Length: 193
Figure 1 (cartoon, rainbow, N blue to C red):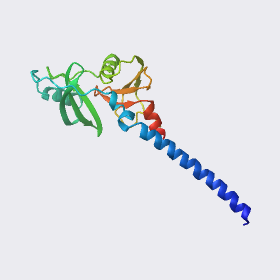
Figure 2 (figure 1 turned 60 degrees about the horizontal axis):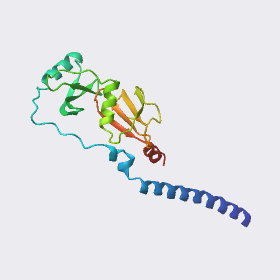
Figure 3 (figure 1 turned 30 degrees about the vertical axis):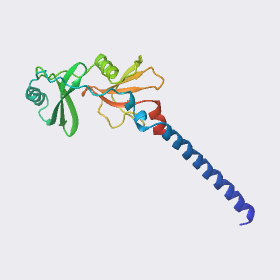
């Protein structure tokens, strides 16, 4: 090879390396300006509410018995009392045919309650997002295709999109009645970079 060939190779190699260094610098700049707590939307989430100690709760055993009557193959793993909107629920985690599933029960009666509907999903999303932004769209997600922002999470879920400058979207699990994913435009850029 002559010297001209070496110079061409050197120019193209310099261009490729220069582009790569520019991309690394730009993505590093983005990461340093956007802390991971902002990317995850944790800065817009409220502190979890405390359960009132004066409340009386029924045992979750009635709900677990009802669950086993509906799903005889279920293997109950845990039953946890947790805050839910203005009150509380028992969240029962179980395996059904090896698949993770959840059921909610009324803590005052111990009875299983139905899966959450659209209106309850919106109420949960509003409570879990501090800025007072209007709800722009509510979509029931039943399948997470390739490249979906809601991957490896329990389905079905309601995706509640807010009309804010961040393009915030909260995913509320139908079975759990809880926010299982927080997404915004920063998250998309972070994921891309």
